[in-house]
Amino acid sequence: MNDPEQSPISVEDLAQLFSQHMPHGRDIGMALDERTSDGQTRMRLPAQPFLSDDTNGECFFPGVLFSLADSACGLAVLRALGRVVPIATLDMRIDHLASASMDADLVAVAECYRMTSSIAFARCELHSGPQSEVCAIAVGTFMLSSSSALVPDISRFAGVEPR
Amino acid sequence: MSASNDHERSALQLPRVRIQAALEAMPYARHLGIRLAGAVPGDGALFHLPFDARLIGNVTLPALHGGVVASFMQIAAIAATWALTRADVQPKLVDFSLDFLSSAGPSDIFAQCEFHRVGKRIAAVGVRCWQRSSIEPVALGRAHLFVAPSA
Image 1 (cartoon, rainbow over the protein chains, first blue to last red):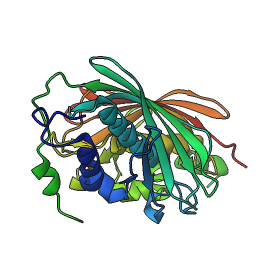
Image 2: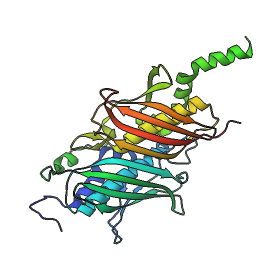
Image 3: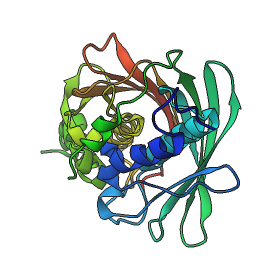
Image 4: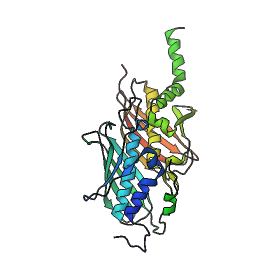
């Protein structure tokens, strides 16, 4: 698993810290689900009126799905790596198959399906509504930093003040 | 006085009033704090997202969340297309593709749209997003929007 000399914090701990303390994630209410046995990364986002696309408040704004997909894919890449390295999104594309209704939590299910020494490829399905239907599909590529010395300082996560 | 004069006047008012109304009709645009900075000669309106600490996605860099940048660009594309087409209902995003050219630092960001093609049902829109200078974009986006026909 994780080499304690290489990384003072496990990928799982970091994933939880990311989702709990990332300011934008806190702002809109993203939550990381427990790691599942199928190896996929699940994040969820409860509906709130300010996340909607119009004043009827029936559907999530598309960019909210992008936020959840970007975060879930990034965490899927970290889990696939099994060690903590800085990653950056190179690009992401999202197809909106249907409106994302707000009558249930929005759920992102992401996986990293290809990893090279410097690039990771990840994809994500977004599910919405009481039947948990697929409303969008996102595909992204991520750059892995060559420097393993840049381990994030966890005190900076802990230092984020609750809003 | 005449109907044609009224039409000309409203056409001149087009970008600002209509885009402002489009932004106000999107609760998430209001939540992020997106505003219209001004009109640029040609087809462009300049969108502005003032920096706020809650928009951060990476606290170690620090950098704005990729989803915040994406949402900002999508809102710019939807508002500009809505204002241009004068559709009765908000254009719907069909797909969106975003290249991140560099991380977006903890400061204000700006965006401008370019209409690649505006058809009866689909608009193809490019969005350029920058922080310090428009010739150094931090992200480039491409969107297809479904434009519902006006009644």
